[in-house]
Image (cartoon, rainbow, N blue to C red; front, side):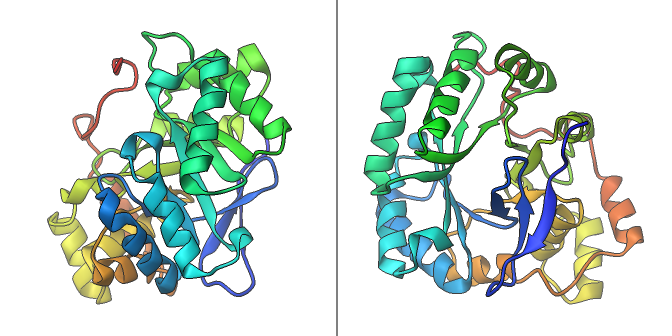
Length: 287
């Protein structure tokens, strides 16, 4: 029987943590820096850390790992107090290439180790994601990364890497928001003991004006974004909303003192749509 992700509070923070299957834990709300301009990233990260974030999610393809590292150092927080994720881009798949790409990422970040390293996309055309996964396992065995996972993998791809390597990702980061709720994939995650992390947790802003969300937000005296982030938390998901606005950055993490009612969760469940996907389908994405 697989172990399920667990939830805990860390002393000194208000943010819940998800305990991963390898025993490490990840803050349930983080700051995503997708499309954050490189010259603004350090300031944005520093603002987020001052607001209480302890989880930053970047990627090699975002071209802002340097700024993330600068923001971390400017915050003067202890390294062990901030959870840092980055991702391996598609052109760097393969065992040896992945090891080199990891070296470049930690150099840009200015870090000695990563908390979480992800394969960004399976890129099935290359058919290298199994060998890439073996490279991530090698890095973890060497102590250079604490946890390893994947992003944008579907159920079949997850089953393949587990079947061929015997090593299960602790986490799969996928598109997930009220318009695209990924119930079948989450069932696979639960069966394998994989934590679910949502990118574009606000549906790239498309969900914020939905009347169902707006009504719940008005009743609770919260912003639509806070309602959606709380929805993710109540479902046990990790969310990494992106913003460069100091006000919104602060609002997006101010979600730990309320919960949604069962009727609210049911209403949001009704927003799910088979046509709700915004980003590429991992089965077809071959960039």
